[in-house]
Image (cartoon, rainbow, N blue to C red):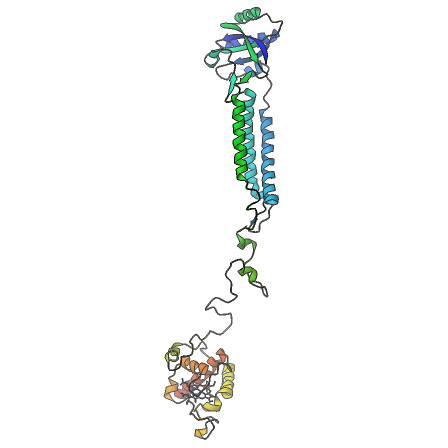
Length: 392
Ligand code: HEC
């Protein structure tokens, strides 16, 4: 390090300081710096200092921050670790903007502070030479760098004549920044910091273990749970999603008949047969076309036993002379059957009754209800003939 000589002049007032600075510069001396107890406006201009470039540095740091964030996120999310976030694209620029912005600001701010500290040689472990301690109190301390030709005695005299209350000449060991580190502490400290950084960084990495990217966030958004026609459902069930390809229990397809939910009695029991009394015929009335159809169905499937006149005397029975051994029910005119609820009739037609078999395989649910409604209409036509003209 070079050894340099400086002449120091102390002023008590900035009113004296400014003309002194002017005169000294005019006389061709090189002012090293002026140390003041507080920031003095205009002093930098008086000293001929150029405007700081710190903002340019700030802009560069901001650019570096922006590129770091963009490059970092981009590389991680598209190349190194492309995760499936609900089927969204890996290169999702709009989602990165907040992070990129924050990094820009962070790099710029921290970078400017560090640069400022570096330029001014402010920081821990930096030992600065102090030309006069009262510069932190009430003195304005002007420091003039001497050359070989400088006559320090004359210069001190000049300073005194300009109003300096105190002058002295100092010889200082100086680098270009006029600051000095206390060795060897900084190298030891930086070695320790570097070691900590490297160990903690390497602790984060565990090689290639756990690098399978088999996780999807929000899979419902990426892969539809909806089932397509003819699609095999294995790829859904393989993912642990419950799907058995059956409609939810109790659901009825649009336009289908209301199901008859009463089961067939176990032998010896009449529980369900009696319960069926409560079931209401979903068909409340028959149009004339429906009546015609119901009548036709009756003649095809029932009339052979129950007779065209609903008297239980069809050709198969014929007052006992036919081949059928049991007397079929007299569907019209017998108070028992006149009073029988439609639900119970439906039960017998669906599951059979003693010697009468089940008609569930020949007639649909709707057709059975239609025929029963039709029989009920015949019963009503007989009991109150004047109010019903639809009898056949
Ligand atoms: C093979 C002859 C036969 C045919 C065909 C037949 N039934 Fe019957 N049906 C009977 C006999 C016999 C009984 C009396 C059963 C008993 O109570 O023991 C009966 C009883 C009934 C009863 C009363 C059931 C009860 O719970 O007591 C109804 C209602 C009935 N039939 C409706 C029909 C309808 C509707 C059809 C046409 C889809 C039909 N039957 C076709 C023989 C027949």
